[in-house]
Image (cartoon, rainbow, N blue to C red; front, side):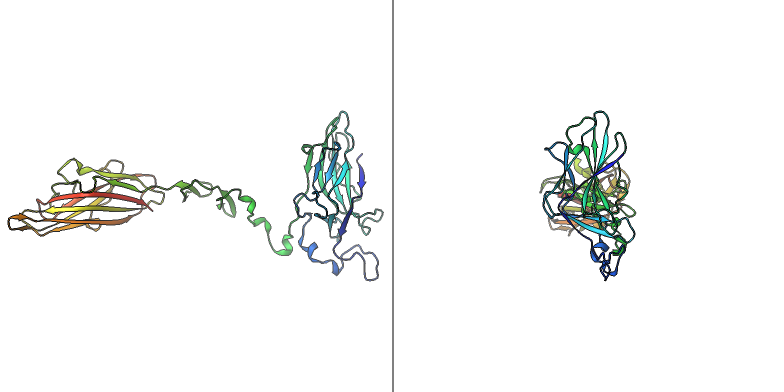
Length: 399
């Protein structure tokens, strides 16, 4: 049968509010004075420090445990009474710690013991005196944990200790911490703390709170240096860290080099057709946003032996990784072109016009992760116009 052994540590207890009426007689229920702040806002449990009233093993003597944080007058525990109207007690440990002896182990059977913090208030425990005490409950051999003494009206379970057969030393492996931290009373403060997101969710620099569903919050660990946060519906959190898609720069010739020759057919955009470079372009992979800026930079040299003419150089975009093949996504047009005006034949000399320029266009609606290709195309208003497109650059910038 379970038994109880009491110890009497040096402690003090604050029972908020009176325990007597105006004539000095003991009362067993609240008076108006007892509706005080601390008992109204605190739920049962330990207060700071985190080790308050913690039960731990000792190296000597071996069959003993220590209760307390090790700092005098630092340990506080809110103990709730079990009788209607009894209220709560703020219990403070005035010494650094209290040593409890663990009864000797049985040679063949396991025993489960428990350590309780017990408040013995005369108003509720008429035959017991000594506020408060530590109650060590020795369990039955081979039985379950003993639980609290039926006579107790205010108590808190601090720890459960497993005493194995024939053991001569209690370690922390045999001790289960049963304490709970004191919290604020939710209903009185009109605060539902179950919906609060605490800092415990974050465990590293750069971690983020992310929504993983309706009224559900999770943690997204920080990405690698240089990565950017990207929406991704396939991820649990709906977002992910991803390496930034770099700008694609394609330069077909060094500055001053010729990458074209005779112009395309009159008024029709086509590739430069005087050398093997007429199909040179660039490919790129669409970023997660599906949007890019395309910049064309180049220098047009153009002339015609008899007529004035205007030449245009622009670009087109197609699907796929083969330049000049695939479905047209952005058609070649004058809006994305650089141009040059040639005044025509003058005397015995052929006048040559030169212009360097650039255009920049925003393209959206691309399929993220798909490959696209670009190439430059030219046209001239006068057939037979000679076009040189020098120092061409096609630049693709992800948005």
